[in-house]
Image (cartoon, rainbow, N blue to C red; front, side, top):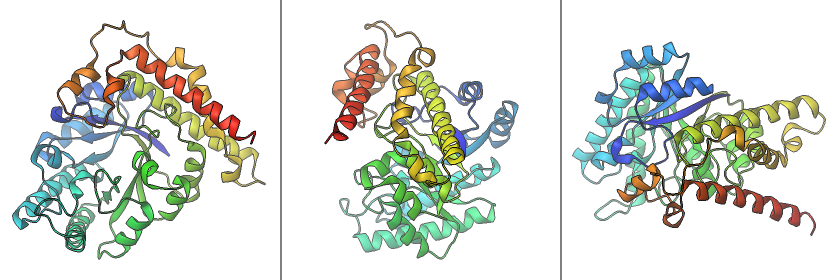
Length: 366
């Protein structure tokens, strides 16, 4: 499996779950310096992408483009594939088609996430009609991508962002019903943490359909900053033969560079522990041997925090996350937490992880 990190080119979405925000050139340079394999791009529209320039930029640093998002169509224009107005749905498809074309020139798939829409909004259609419109669009757009040699990625979102498909197994059933065989699932661990009872079981249900993974912790922060046990997840991904990208669509806290560093360390530890478990415990089975190693990853991240994290800024320093929130862009961040200075937020994160460790140990004592 390979690593990727997100970069947003949409100022209006600043503060959302994308790690880098200050242009492609700076993002590519930092991603390469940290050892990532690729970047995932969130553009405002296809016209904002110059495939020839981007290909040269990433090639110079030894990177690739993992995927390209279409969410700018929703953020900027409120377009999605289940709008009741046929002309608006056509504009949504045209927007996505443009991203598919640009992404294909970069050797990457396009992602349909927020642009899938939802049913039952004011003056909207019922579920059956909305799903029919979505199927029609995915059939058309999936075949368009196939003609360019790329798959199309569809992302099940959590219930607060869509009411169409929220779980992997339900999404697999839906994709099986399509005429096209060129649509694959983007499995986002943040959304799955909300909707799935067992993330590893859900991944196994997606065997043959998962084409991309957003690899973040339970709170949408970098790996190791929440309570996700990544070991069985990595085991399940290996079991189904997944060899694609583990991409960081994460909230950049405490700030972008630190988030990127913590994430790459977390990915490497998860993959390394998985390789070690497979090599040393073949008789017990890979998934069984990996139980509980997510705690080890969190502990290792904390033990090496001084090496990974920059000096904490003074409490009164300018905080770009708080400034972004003041613009009322991102409502997914917790208001009370954002009132704290950067140092206090980071300390709170570490205390939370320690508290979780204590609870897990106490559970083992009955």
